[in-house]
Image (tube, rainbow, N blue to C red; front, side, top):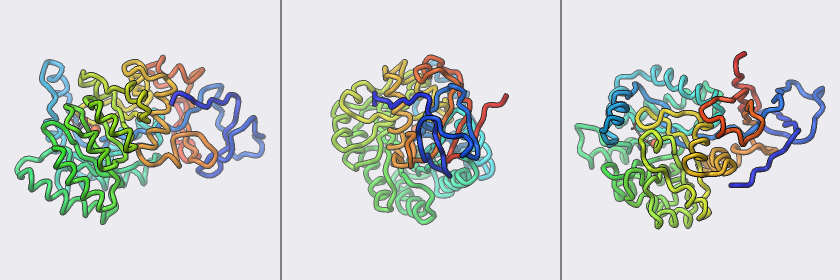
Length: 380
Ligand code: NIG
Ligand code: FE
């Protein structure tokens, strides 16, 4: 993670959607269009492997009340679920387009988006169909995750809701190919390890890949379960145990860390240094959602990782690109600038990559290229 390959004074030749060649000065007359990085830094398109970017409404009152001492108990998920229930699919697409468009302008070319604010067959389907529409219309690679097990809706018994996830929602998600991953909020006061296991086994049986919101609020053994199920990733991990980290390593599960959430909630950060020292391929994500993190820039997340979790800038960049791509099983396609991989690039108006965390909070993005096309250019 700490070894970047940095090339100076090279050109990147793109053909179609891919990088064809990286090398010293190519002849500009032989190419159709040239993008001048103007001496800036070109990094791989950023990959955000954990977001809840499609939702309705906002929760600033809960946010401010929490800062006055109210603890975070996840109860606000139901408030967002009510707003989603009232929203039309077009409304979800419109707000999703705004948030995801802002992420793209911050250099994110690949993002995962979870459902989880529907909490019913209709609601979850509406969210995932909105993600599908956004995938068709935005110049971003979007990966959908079904998170029906995000909270317990009111008015239905716990076991009955879990049964409806397994017998109705997962089969519908499979039939309509609405998601690639299934995720469960496995934590204190949310889904128990046993409930999570039951849901994720059903999801796996339906051909979905697995993710977990694990050990965010308490060390309940979410990481150990992620290892047992050979999930693709275990996310959050603020309270993960030493045993949990060893299990992740053993099973090859990617830890996805979300420092923007720890920052927003005022909680201790995940033990990222310990994980890296154990040889775990740490990935970073925003967790952008209406309750616990409104940061949607991966550049800001890289800054937090460097300042608050003591990652080196090289480790943080790897975590936000190639390791994040691994957390979406897309490492063959995206996450690094390599011949044959997708031509997803971000041009930063910086002198070198070490300035990324230094200019924390600024948006030094001059241009974003996705699939070989310039999809964003800073105005002016
Ligand atoms: O990843 N931890 C659980 N779910 C979200 C928060 C959802 C919400 O509060 O709306 C998260 O932080
Ligand atoms: Fe989350």
